[in-house]
Length: 179
Image: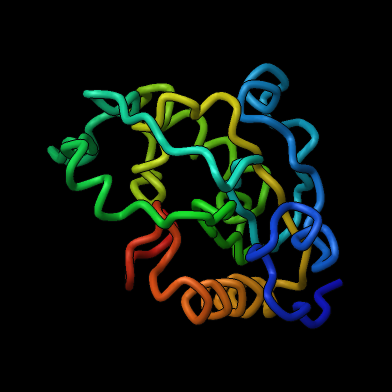
């Protein structure tokens, strides 16, 4: 299920990611409407991407995500601008290691979407996505792996991204767990 990641995944765009084994690329709006039914109930890596890596972002003054454990996910537009990675289509890389139903792709994506809808759900990582004005048009893709291969697939994509862009994807925080 998990194969080697091709060189430079996500650097050139969505077709690059498809060649690396990612599939789906459903819009956030579509996945909300269908309650993420098209996302596999399996372990793997998942990503949030935008179709046009050239477009500049517009940040909302407040995040649509809920507070979590007393923390407000909202950041200033200046702080988000510092995090922004120009010319990158990958905005967030998540992992679903499959150590129980809460940690399978479908459930991780559902929780991510619910958190972005302002519901009190444990999915703090990736929170910066929910301050993008275009969040509903972003796309989510996944790569099914073995439970052992999920973290490796996500880490490999993050490493290649870091090597190419000199930074983590916009909504990934170094050392932050996917929860």
